Each structure stands twice: as structure tokens, then as C-alpha cells.
Length: 146
Image (cartoon, rainbow, N blue to C red):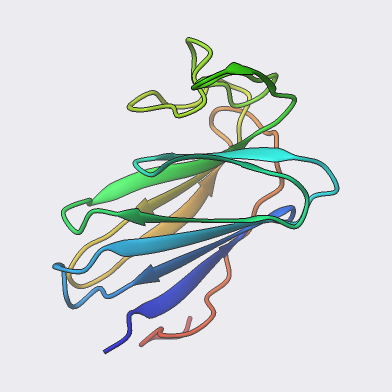
């Protein structure tokens, strides 16, 4: 049985969330696609990080026990070697490429999600400022339509 798919559209970045909400033993998979004309460094808590030149895609899985998380884009980044990255927007502090347990520093647009056995929720937050335009769009696998 294949997992259902819920995409999370970012005007420049497209994030697709694939989740089996009725089966918490499966990992949730995110696919992030950079549709910007410039490089965006994706970051996810949990999930890791990826440099994405224009048109590139990044896939990452979140453990089945994960109940919530966030995804954001970092811009204006300069690499300083292994796991070293300094960004103008969305930087996770300490010059880290993979943010680990650190969230991005403002300004950043945040895509947030909550995963449960009965209902997943997603939202876009501008509480920490704005750096990348984002929107959500369900692609398939949805039981209910608004």
C-alpha cells in the first residue's frame, strides 16, 4: 500500500508531504523542489538540509514517531567547508549546513506540520518574518476536501 501524498507548495520551492496518517509505523517523506531562479538551501527540523540550485529536488524522511516539524528555505548562503554554512536569511546559527536541532533565525518563512493518526495539519507562518514565498496544495491521497 503506497502512502498518501500531500504537497506543500512554496512559490519558489515545492514541498511535497507523503504520509500515511492511518498507519503511524511508516515514515513521512518530504520532497522539496526549488523553483526559484536562484539557489535555496533547504532546512528541516527534523529532516536535515540540502543545497538546491534552481530546479533541484531534495527528498527526506521523518521518523514515524515524529508528531510535528518545520521546513524553511535559507538564502544568501556561503559555504565554509564541511557542515559549515552562513546564510543571510533562515540561518540556523553556528554556521551549520545541517541545522541539527536548531531552527532558522529570522527572517524566514516557515512551513509547519503536525502529524497524527487521524488528522494532519499544515500551515505557513510569517511570525519570524518573510524570506521565501510559500503556499500549500494537496495533490492526492486526501480523504476530505475543504
